[in-house]
Length: 113
Image (cartoon, rainbow, N blue to C red):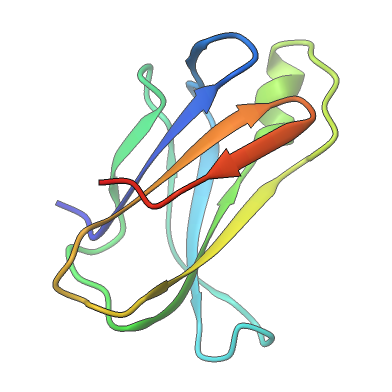
């Protein structure tokens, strides 16, 4: 199992957000250049169960979601062309689940289980 998983829900439609492209990146310095580690696309349930390696070291990571592409495919005008969630891994032995609740003009996230 990947150290990182995600789940995207379209809160406006009340459905999983299928087909959202997601990129996992890392950076030694969050203000410096980011390095891509993995890419994936949400399944029909809005999930990516395998995104990157089974273990990641302590440090800062970022998930970038192509929300503009998702809404464009559904013919919905949206404000955010992408959502970037930056988070810190402090315990490499843990699994990190990063859900995204999405609508055309708002989003929220939290540390999932």
